Length: 222
Image (cartoon, rainbow, N blue to C red; front, top):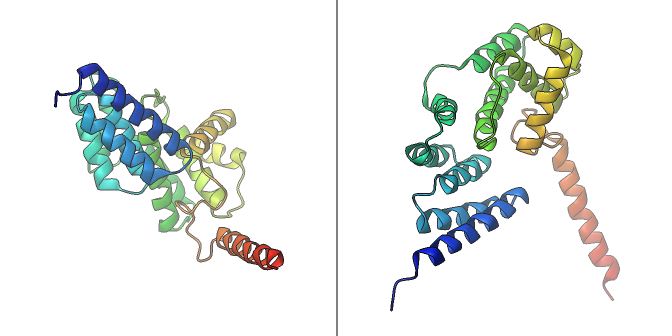
């Protein structure tokens, strides 16, 4: 059998990539990973597919695999700005955002578990942002937004004004970064990824939904 034409292979790879992006947006992450892996298999020299696979793996909590995909991406990607951002993920020390974040949250007596959640959020966000440019001129703004987001998720009473003052940044800049975090990571209230309390209220909602489903089923039974 003749080998498929190169153009046909590229089209097939792009088809998998498009389907993977759709799955990623719908939180069908395992399907997204499967599609991006197929895209990478068919077109291993396309940097975009490696980056999308890294994003999906990070969302699924596959940290080591996400970093491997990022390494593959960096070998193919010519944009030096992206190299600078992603290579920081492989370094042992803290970047300026993590340093400011640790100082701010530790100084406020925030538990280590929540500081760790904020660090995780920053790690995931840098990957999820993909090719978008991230302004790093004042890292304290990102630190303030991460701190605020994690505190809100863990039911700590705090305002954007208070944290803007703590990190010496503008309230408007903090608000903008907060919205970027929420939108890019698709964060929900009590998000399981970053909630560190003993009992997550979302569990009760899941249980209530399951109970309602059983009651509806019983109600419709003849």
